[in-house]
Amino acid sequence: MKEFWEERYGNEEFAYGVEPNVFFENILRKNELKGSILLPAEGEGRNAVFAAKMGLNVTCFDMSLQGKLKAEKLAKINNVNINYLVGELSELHFEENSFDVIALIYAHFPLKVKAQYHKRITKYLKKDGVLILEGFSKDQLKLNAENNQVFGPKNIEMLYHIDEIRSDFKEFEIEVLTEEEINLNEGIHHKGKGVVIRFVGKK
Image (cartoon, rainbow, N blue to C red; front, side, top):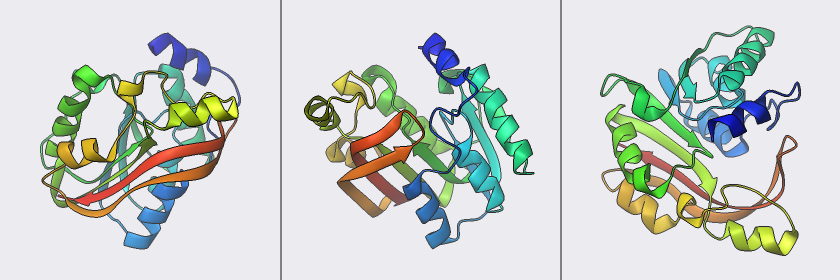
């Protein structure tokens, strides 16, 4: 999997564009979120750079070194600073209760570690901290077949379901939890129809 992302992010063009995810942007603006933010599986840095431009103190990570290089390039262009680490969640260590915001934007994990990772991420969030999530629903596979497109993991177990979010983040006060069909326009690899789960919760 690491090789896949190194190849995808190794091209000059930004695979998912340089603009932030629409849902992520809207939540940051609407809630006027401040403080520190953690962005797992951040890829080429579009959301990290936006968060930094909004005044947040950004820490992010991805398994891809190419992703880091592209993110730092984007940060330099936008004259902001981000702390970008290379590694998987299981390899990295953060202080518990140390982030005001955590955002999982298309961060899909294998079933055997997904609930465990969600629990671990929750520990890093401060009390009253906000978790933002957008990811492909399990219904994405059907939509892909209908529209002859390939978005998200091919393994249905890596995709999201509303009940799974309720279970994994049961200690959160739910502010948003929806399944929506949207039109994606994020770079060359997210252009078309998507079925996504959107979640905002307060710890």
